[in-house]
Amino acid sequence: MITSAEMHNKTAIITGAAAGLGRATALKLAAAGANLSLVDIDAQGLAETAQLARVHGATALEQVQDLSRPETARTIVDNTIAQFSRIDALCNVAAVFLPRHTAQMSDDDWDLTLAVNLSAPFKLIRQSLPYLLDAEGAIVNVTSCAAFMGQGYLAAYSATKAALNQLTKSLAMEFMHQPIRINAVAPGGMQTSLAAGLRHLENPDPSILGRISPLRGLVDIDEVAAMVAYLASDTASGYHGACISIDNGITAG
Image 1 (cartoon, rainbow, N blue to C red):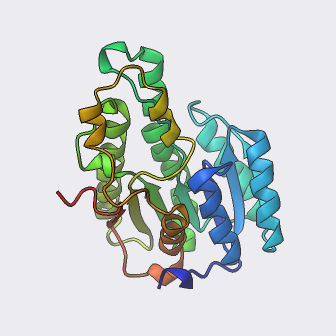
Image 2 (cartoon, helix red, strand yellow; image 1 turned 30 degrees about the horizontal axis):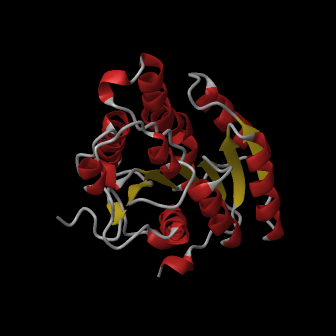
C-alpha cells in the first residue's frame, strides 16, 4: 500500500531535506514522480539531496532557509510558486532536537525549538493553504512518539511535538469540508543526526534514559519516509486527521 504513492506532475515542499528523514522523504517523492521544493539550512546537504532526487528525473529547487526566522515561510512558498506554479503537498519534516536538563535549558534553545518545530510548520501551512486547496493537496506533519509519552530531558521537544499533533487534528476539523487532507506521522527513535544529540547530554540518569529506549530497536527511516510520501499523495485519499505511529511499539505501554 505505502509504495503506491503517485505524484507525477505534482509539487511537494519538504523541510529538513538535507539529511535523515527529510532526505529520505524527498527521494521517495522524487521516485513517485514529484517535483521538489527542498528546504534546509544546510546548503551542502541540500545540494546532495537535490542531486540524488534528479537521478529520479525530479526537478529540484534548493532553498537554503532558516526556519526560525518569521519571514521564511512566505519566502519558501513564493519561491516554490515562482518555480512550479503549484503546491500539491507540504511535508513538515524539519525539527530541532536539543536534549537538556530543564533547569539548564537556555531561553535561546527553548525559543529555537518552538520556532522550528511548531511555529514554522504553522506558518508554512498558513502560507501554503490557498495553493493546497486549489490543488486538492495534502499536509503531512512529522511529529514523534514523544507527543504521546513523557520523555525526560526532552521537555521542549516533546511539547512541540504534542502541539503539532493537536494542530494537525484541529486543522483537519476546520477543513473537514474542504478539498485537502491533513495528517501526521509519529516516528519512534531513528538513526539520525538528531538522535545522536542524546549522547551529548551531561550526566543523565540512566534509569530515565532507559524508559525511552525502544525494546525492538530503532525505526527504519525508509519506512517512515514511505508513509510520509504515501500520505502526501492522492493514493491516501481516506486519511484525514490521522496520526500514524511508526515506533516499534514504544508507545504501546
